[in-house]
Amino acid sequence: MGKLWGPKELADFLNVPLQTVYQWRTKGYGPPGRRMGKHLRYLPADVVRWVKDLPTGA
Image 1 (tube, rainbow, N blue to C red):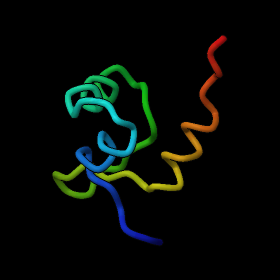
Image 2 (cartoon, rainbow, N blue to C red):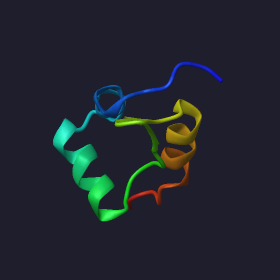
Image 3 (cartoon, rainbow, N blue to C red):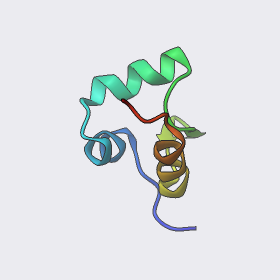
């Protein structure tokens, strides 16, 4: 397993505001995250898979 991303790294990768990451989490949207103690972490491979699975716009 490689380096895990925190919410800031996820926001930077997706080019969205950090607050958007937290809003998605509250609404059950966004890539799957994992709690490690009090910290929220994301596997980069899960994030890439989530992006690839998004529907494409017209």
